[in-house]
Amino acid sequence: MGKIKRRGEPAIGDILHAEKPLSEDERDITLRPQNIAEFLGQSKIKENLAVFIAAAKARRESLDHLFLIGPPGLGKTTLAQVVAHELGVDFKVTSAPALDKPKDLVGILTTMSKNSVFFIDEIHRLKPAIEEMLYIAMEDYELDWIIGQGPGARTMRLPIPRFTLVGATTKAGNVSSPLVSRFGITCRFSFYEQEDMEAILRRSSVILNVRIESDAARLLAASSRGTPRVANRLIRRMRDFAQVKQAPSITRAIVENGLTQLEIDSLGLERYDREILRMIIERYNGGPVGAETLAISVGETVETLEDYYEPYLIQAGLIQRTPRGRIVTEAAYAHLNIAHKHTTGALF
Ligand SMILES: Nc1ncnc2c1ncn2[C@@H]1O[C@H](COP(=O)(O)OP(=O)(O)OP(=O)(O)O)[C@@H](O)[C@H]1O
Ligand SMILES: [Mg+2]
Image 1 (tube, rainbow, N blue to C red):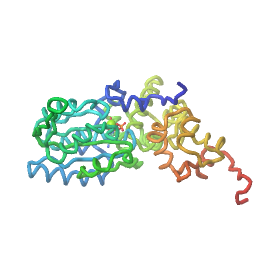
Image 2: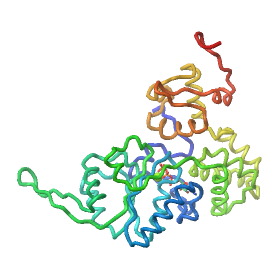
Image 3: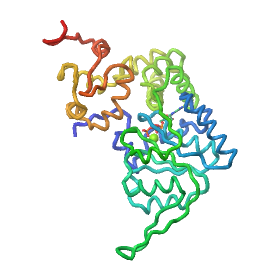
Image 4: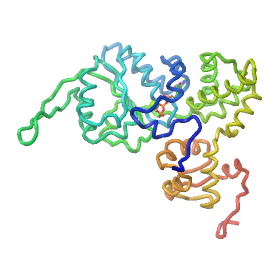
């Protein structure tokens, strides 16, 4: 369909789909941190959560509902599991598209044990009827259950155990304000710092039983777009390169060659990131260009463009969002080694 396919990365459709096939990082469950000590980086989020978790445990209450916001692969699902583990409670997981009928939600909420963590991924995609049921469930720990049909129908209130809803989204702007206001705790994920990425790679290398030299880890960390999922994917590929070369460890040279092979550059940009930048520069004269137009031009959905590509390009200072659309920065011209021609009417 002419869509951009990222190597090794599940398509956004797969990420969003309820019964998505397991991606590599999900299959390799061992890499996923189980407790808060293994969950590296995001120190502000962790510090606060540790307090709220300890307090909830001391009171033997459920933790307040938790809203997790951030780009794909930064650890939202992981953190939800860690929270359940730290609370010592059951963990139930679903995604908004999987909650098709009210009975799907009723089925889960009525069978949960007390104080469980209930994780809903892609919570911006809830159907209105489900969302309204959730409002009452979150606030009063009850469900509105409609019995019968037509004029004889009546509503019954069904008590449910106390629980913690953890809602995750890559698109906070698309979550309705009544739902947002029912979350007591909000965590915004940011891209990981270089040293956290290195620590994540060191941890993964131990689990994957492969040695990585420190200058190699430094380069790999810098090329992983501040995203643990990308780092874990890349270290597996580097392990492959090392293995076929029969190298005892992942060296800087192996990483340099491997990244070239995978068309990942010094900023961690993949081919399609560069294509997006080039498209804005060459076809739209550096922008501004609207997200829809840009998405069509590069053959990608607006959702993938906005969720996956843009957050990192913005973070890396290569594009900016303006009210009139996306523009590339001087840094993008420099990174792609393209001379910046000023058009007529410009300053020069
Ligand atoms: N803080 C962390 N420390 C170590 N590893 C991490 C951390 N966060 C995430 N990871 C690793 O990155 C992988 C991706 O994280 P996760 O699936 O939780 O991301 P996500 O934010 O839920 O992404 P999506 O929006 O696509 O659902 C995990 O399998 C885990 O191995
Ligand atoms: Mg997730």
